[in-house]
Length: 516
Image (cartoon, rainbow, N blue to C red):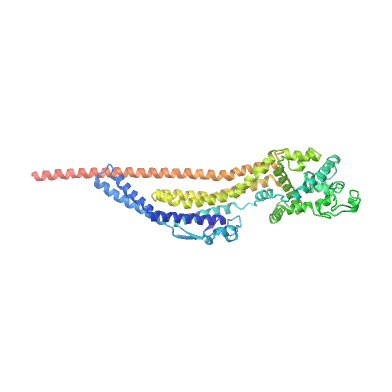
């Protein structure tokens, strides 16, 4: 039998272990046999009411035999645990994801000793096998998306933890980026070749290739305070320290960013991320958009910086670059970045992470819901009198929850394909949600909100439809039972009347014969 992930496997085992525990309690206390008393009592009371005793007793006997046979069959197939189920016997994974095996996860360390195996009723084992198999086939049929949106969400979660790196980024923005950007707007240089390669918005961030590759910009401005890791250079730093009394030098901005003669600020930012994720995401984005890896990595670094600024400062702009477009002094830059709150910061600090949380939490909630449904089945079976109608409803409920996995896959497929249609290039794809118009980041914000509602709404709609269908089936079943009982009552009454009439006729004939 197949399950989607190791947690679902352990949750399934735990659910059936508790089912077996509760079922044993019902059996040992005799509660499991109480429904048979009600079956017998109902059969007699239903058919003796309004009917002649002999005809009613005959019908009661037949009805009792049938109901008891149905209840015994329900116990044999849907109540008594028979089939052994263990984590080792489960196939973990789905058609679109190579999941870790249970022994490769921390779940195994915690649950393996206590959740080894359980016995499952034959009916429910078949239900789980059919449900997981059907859902897996449906997912395979729709195809597996590239999960590029999920990768971008994980990129947005990357944070700069080292406070010294954050301080250097702020210092670089104040002493290199803002003066260079001001000069760029004053001089309006001819850099179309650079902009064509790196995007028209390249001058809007601190690692701009325009400022790095154009003479008079980052090779002209220097750090105003010593930067740790850069040695004192007499030719460069002699004017600041005529006696050479300093531990570190004042690198030019291009040296500082690229690491010429000291630690690279660009590389320090990259090192703050999860390296395994970073390399995989860079290769995927580069292959998808056909961009050079350096261009791709620049875009990723820019997004990390912008997300960090919006998350920490609450700025509605896409980082220091956005604020610098309206101010060219350090004081206004920092105060504005700390005070302005807008759509972009709301998205970054609330909706974006919330969407990622919904994605990650949905399969966990599904696993625990299924676990709860399995473990509570003894109550449903016993208190329904081992009704097959209840068995069918419970089966439909379990299959409905299992099918949510397919609906989530549909949601992610739509999201990835819509995203690729909206942003066919790297520049649009990596634009942060800054709320500055209907393009770029705002489209991403709106798409994420819509898909988040789909992630919740599709299972809700499907569950409602299945509940309505189950209600209709229950109504038809109830109507059929009522019709059958009514017809049986009419048949019994007719039979009794015929018997009485035949008796009277026989009595009259016997009386006439005696007088003769």
